[in-house]
Amino acid sequence: MQNEKILTVSEFVNELKDVVNNHPSFKNVALVGELSNFKAHHSGHFYFSLKDKDSRIACVMFKSKAVTVQFRPKDGDKVVLHGSLQVFESSGSVQIYADRMNLDGLGDLHIQFEQLKKEYEEKGYFDAVHKKSVPPYPRSIAVIVGENSAAYHDISRTLAERWPQALQIDLLAYVQGENAIKSIVQMLTIAHNKKVDVIILGRGGGSIEDLWAFNERDVVEAVFNATIPVISGIGHESDTTLTDFVADYRAATPTAAAVYATPNRTDMLALIRDYKNQYYIRVRNKLMQEKKQYDYIINTSYLGKPEAIIDKKRQQIDYYQTRITHQVSMFDAIKQALQRFDVESESALMKIFHTHEQLLISGNREFARIMNYKLDNQTRLLQSTNARMENLFGQNLRTLDKNRQVLNDNQVVLVRRVERSINLKKSQFSDIIKTLSNNNPAQKMMQLFDKGFVKIQHDDEPITSIHNIAVDETVTMTLSDGILTAKVTGKEEL
Image 1 (cartoon, one colour):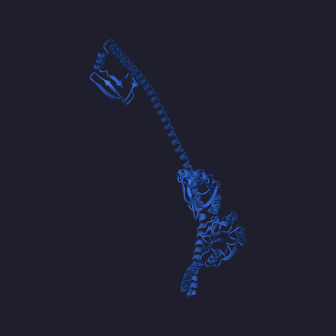
Image 2: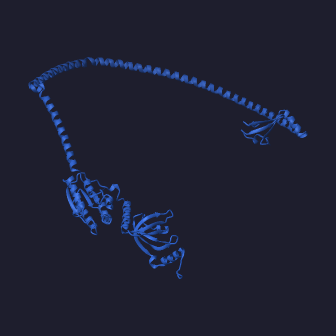
Image 3: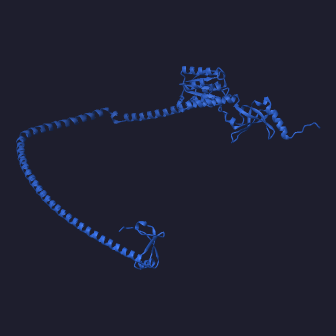
């Protein structure tokens, strides 16, 4: 007991730290496990645990390393972690200081899937403009599935139940493994050569690894470039492949793909029955209408007695013959009257012509006389108007000269008055100045106030000119017995 070395906790943790931190096996470790208690701190650091079914270890990944992670970590992700094992002094615990973190094999496929998806989406492979319509009543359907697979049986059963009229062409392919890509592309080519109406590309559910052939470029490109509508029914509802995105229609399951590709035979038969009944009703109504028309024709009196129709037509012929004879007689009478008129009217027309000729000559002379009379009147009126205008213009000109002289006289008088007023003001101001200079200023000021003069100030400064004050400003006016406050409402120079 005397040789026992007793250490403090800190000393022990430091020794442990030296051993762990300097041990070659712990400087570069690679661990695989599942993320747990993952937290992305606002500082940018990652804090989490890495666990398997039996153990777990604390991990930290600082911001400088965390920014290199190519996916968004979350609890449950299976990852491969690279880093070093070190002792955390505060708690005395060991933890992994991670330098790199990648998804385990399955995770790498997810990354590749997202990269391919982004690439094809940017190229426009998923755009609706590329989607082809599935024919409503296909005559032939190509089924590309695995041989003797559950998907094959589900599709075949559904097609037989819903639309047995269509020819089902089975194109059995590898849908998983290294041969799947070439096999699927080959079957798509055969389907095009057979000129089917629609293609169903199906497979049962599985992991992303099992379904990966449907994410390969060759398969995706073949489906996208297909000239025949392609319906994808790959995996279960939760499974999604790139082929689903480029297909013309994505069904959740192989069975759903067969349903979408075909009409329902039962529904079609019911529809046909409805059409048949409607057609029967229309034909029956048409026959009844024609029968009524036939009965009406048969029951008319004319058809019952055909000789009555002939007698009536003969009567009409007699009537029209009588009218024609009458019209011919009238025509002859008119013709004779016209002949008599031609002889008698020639001389009468000549008389009328001469009479109108004389009237026309007389009328022209009268018209000329009237127009000359009117022209003379207008000429005299114009001359009279011109004389009046010249007289009026002369009067206005004389009035204008007279007014101009009056204006000049008034201007002279006004100038003289202003000069006298200015001289008077100058004399008054001279007297004031003499008085102020020869006597006591205060006494003389009061005398001036008594005479009606005032002292005007603004802000204690005297106002000696109208230019020293502005309109709307306030002034004080000193009088003999007090001070007034006033507001300037206007200014006018002398």
